[in-house]
Image 1: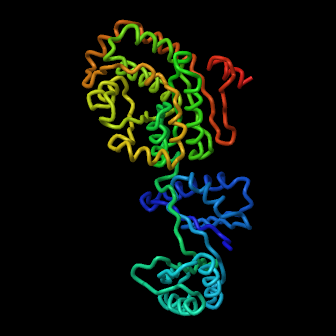
Image 2: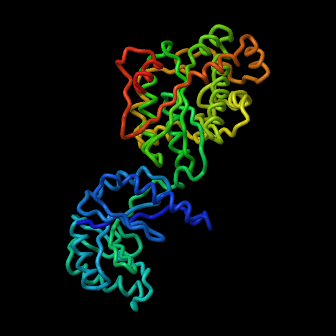
Image 3: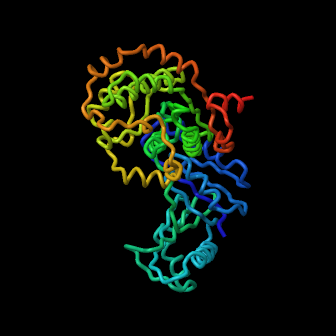
Amino acid sequence: MYEYIMVRYGDLILKGKNQHIFRHNINNQIAHKMYGLNVEIEFQHDLVFIKLNDTDPMDVIERLNFISGLSSYSKTVKCAYDLDEIADKSIALLKHEVHAKTTFKVETKRADKSISLKSFEISNLVSKKVLRAVENLVVDVKHPETTLNIETRLDGTYIYTKKIPGMGGFPTSTGGRAMLLVSGGIDSPVAGYLTMNTGLEIECVHFESSPLTPVESVQKVIDLVTVLSRYAPSSKIKLHLVPFREIHEMILKEVPESYIITIMRRMMYRLAEILAKKNSCKAIVTGDSIGQVASQTLESLITVQAVVSSLVIRPLSTMDKSDIIKIAKKIKTYPISSRPFSDCCTVYVPKRPVIKPTSERAEIFEKAFDYQKFLKIAIKETITVEINERKPLNIIDKGFSVGEIFKSENN
């Protein structure tokens, strides 16, 4: 039935003279995501047309849903500018889509200005023919349940009824690079998704404390980053696994219980900034939501952030947990995050964590051990793996430490 998917760009008008850069980026991503499908892509100035060649349109739309910077898309049929042919195609489309009584109207967009008839005249002529041929249609020009859209362009006339929302935002990788602190929880993957939706490309860092934490917690993170990689321009994201056990144990031994999480997060920020600078990332991204837990009060966030000079982005900072969960379910990270395996931030939760920590107090506790030495070792022993949605990585049941697992994978 459908011959094309009509793809509309997002808010590129806001980019002024740089529109062509963003358009080129999106076009490359569309071509990459369509790899392996029997389709043809036609790039025009203001739209993209994907010729289906009998490919299931939902297969195309499912892939488009992972591209940031797209406003919407429509399943369309195409014909020449001929009123009889337009009416015939419109009738066939409506009979295919409308199976119950519905209000409708016809709306015409006349991009080809050489056509003598005005847009409303084309709509009137087509609607009369459609009403005679299709049952269950009642005209309502103000609040129709179904709108038959006709777009006359230089290369032909496109007809469709629905606009399917895209991701919106700006194309990923056009705004620079950022380092996402990713745990096995619900929040950080959502923060990563929203960050990519603003045009930033991400790398991920995870602090693993095996055997204090189970290897399954690392697999959770790998699986979460695999989901996020679907939104990456090349379908790949770098994941840096930082060995955190020695730092973790030192903090548990030397730091008062109430300050354990504060000091632990300060160490993570220090490590994340080192890795960010090594990998040309201009910002650090976290899944913090203000006031959600004791470690995310304003005082806690200020005390933790004080150890870095990098920009810290918190996409979830003012969001309700319920809204975060909705996004997690939408992007399909929620079932993975819900697996019952703890990471180093949750395995030892203080009974009475400090709610209003200060940098001065934190610095006093940090002087109890030579943390710089441990940070250097952790950076040196960091394992970096490229996560690719097309090549899922499973490290469970290997019987090794995390380091040995990746050594064996690389060999």
